[in-house]
Amino acid sequence: MIDSALHDRAGRRVTLRPVDDDNWRAVADVAPRDDQRAWVAALAARYLVLTMRSDVWTSLAVYADETVVGHVMWGVDDDGSRWIGGMVIDAAEQDRGVGRAAVRTLADWLATQGGPIRLSYHPDNVPAAALYTSLGFQPTGAMEDDELVAELTPA
Image 1 (tube, rainbow, N blue to C red):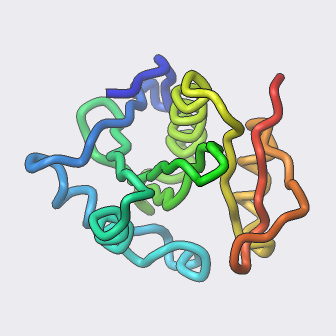
Image 2 (cartoon, rainbow, N blue to C red):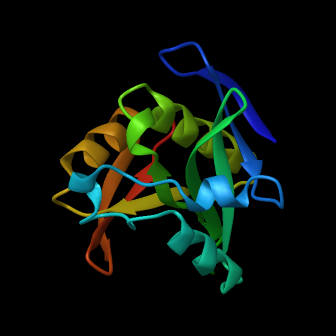
């Protein structure tokens, strides 16, 4: 379990846990709001399959207390940078601070491993840009496919 002792606005502790035999179905069923489907998969199941078929990415379940509320994945690039990707918070759980706590928790954990921490988002995804910028991620000017690359700058 990855735990930075962060809570959502309802006071629930947000942790990241391996996807396993007990939680994979709940993770697979995580679905974003309809207006977010231009930027993320319709179900977290797509990201689970991606991590099963890739040596780069690792999926994590996002928990609020003991309830699966999302998915996030991380990977290491050839240059040693750590990447955060494939974050989906279930539509019913959004706007409660879960995504913010999940990104901070994963970024804190990745920072202990060294190397820059990066993520990417579509330029039209204004809420994602606002979230990531508020957490210290700054656009690098690089693009990954059709997404802007941002890197965590030390506080």
